[in-house]
Amino acid sequence: QQPVQSPQAVILREGEDAVINCSSSKALYSVHWYRQKHGEAPVFLMILLKGGEQKGHEKISASFNEKKQQSSLYLTASQLSYSGTYFCGTESLGAGGTSYGKLTFGQGTILTVHP
Amino acid sequence: NAGVTQTPKFQVLKTGQSMTLQCAQDMNHNSMYWYRQDPGMGLRLIYYSASEGTTDKGEVPNGYNVSRLNKREFSLRLESAAPSQTSVYFCASSPGWGRGKSNYGYTFGSGTRLTVV
Image (cartoon, chains in turn orange, cyan):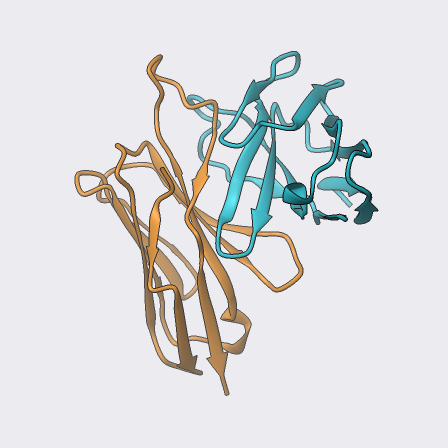
């Protein structure tokens, strides 16, 4: 099952903050976050491996609550360059205890930042 | 430039025609993946190759076949194209899975926009 992202879309002005959530019905081993500009390939932002882990990348950070099977992406002081579609990709271990690195992606959250 | 190269970038097929999408990476990655992207659906896994010499089905494998030709190359074949296969296809690679390798994300190719009429 696909993880569910919320909201589906968000519109911001430069300097405002946003939170994008990703929720899975399956136990998670890791969560990836990607950003895709229109007509381009998705670009890797960060990966979270441990429950409760929080990582940062400039003004973009994320958290991972393993027990709740949820992750959130935080964008602070947004810039025009942050516009795009954000995807979470979740990795779950299979019956044999491996995932082979397969990711299941959410449907995406469209972020638009205006001047 | 190091990365993932996909060819062709655009293709129009007639229903029933066949074609092969090519993908090559020069990062010495072990694992490679094929995804399709449709509006509002996100990315869905078609097939993957966890390591050279292995391939396995993903979420939506029907109508497709793959070949892991060597460590660098992973091709996707449509034997008899259908309009439902109109989509954008992305190839991706990663160092692999397991201890020490799971800290890295995917590197995606630029995609192939396929239209089946």
